[in-house]
Length: 451
Ligand SMILES: Nc1ncnc2c1ncn2[C@@H]1O[C@H](COP(=O)(O)OP(=O)(O)OP(=O)(O)O)[C@@H](O)[C@H]1O
Ligand SMILES: [Mg+2]
Image (cartoon, rainbow, N blue to C red):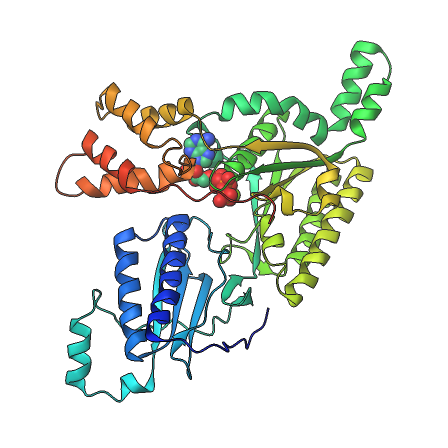
């Protein structure tokens, strides 16, 4: 890893093409994982960037992801090495940026002096040959809010805390629209209750066995930590929120939910993860001290592993991981009404000391045939879509031709909006629109578990 890495080889024009193909492949993957650009547009961007590079008009090309609030949350920079006139070769991987509904993925280029030296008419003539009408951008290409890692990538280093009172009607309403939530919750909820409220178990033991059984002590010895692990967009965060809401309802108590995430920037406190963790655990412990129930969701825990590449954030990660371990240990001594959920799509990359402490690890997978069918029937209600169309949609969105099946979020945030855009605003939505969308949209790439 280096900030000033430069290439030693000299590339010919043909090699520029090769490097740009790599840029195009990266952009394609990023577009798929964020759900924000069509393949057609990706091809146009790549062709234009290639043309600019080959003419020597390019200093750098940046791929920039903004969230729905307009904050830059990820970026990748491809620099042209001045002597060779090519883009720096990129390392593959690290392109699975988060699905970002309502966000914006764009390519921002910085042009060379050679470009600026052109006459207006030459510039206009060159622009005519491009596929996209490029406009000027005010994006700060030093990406002040981000940390650089892995050669050309930038990540947001700001974590945010969101605090919510439970029960929460908004969470309850969206839980109702989650396929398979109820079945999973039925499997989970007794165990979660034991973890969240050991006193309840002691009371049960006294009531039915007239003393505190040894088994209760063994069960209470566990750490109140649950890991939700699985591929992107499979419902980990949604299920954790839904479970907290339901547990609060069952206990008939007011409860607080704290959510620590990189995606709540702008809506809550922002800062280094370890200090936010410390604060969050302290508040959670205080809440529990007031005999109220408290939940903490540590979301996207994989971001901890994802930033291991840089020395600077490596230290920060270590501190954060140690804080989690120490605070979870404290919670057990506390015997409070506290439950911590940790969501990750790369459980293999988590620190083993954390994984070992988890009382339970719940796996999340891409939806099965039945689950996809249930989702289509739920979301397409009122459209009189034929059964055979639904079955075809289920088939098209399954694993096939070497590509994985669609995730829940691929279905809801990519396929259905894509179908809708084919009809809206000029005509009614048809089964063919849905089939075409299912053929055109590609599922998110599978996240490798260990790295
Ligand atoms: N069980 C489900 N039924 C229907 N839709 C779902 C379900 N689970 C998730 N979704 C859809 O997928 C979206 C993503 O879900 P969620 O954020 O919980 O996934 P995740 O596993 O936490 O993903 P990531 O790994 O990217 O954080 C939700 O907003 C929702 O639209
Ligand atoms: Mg999530």
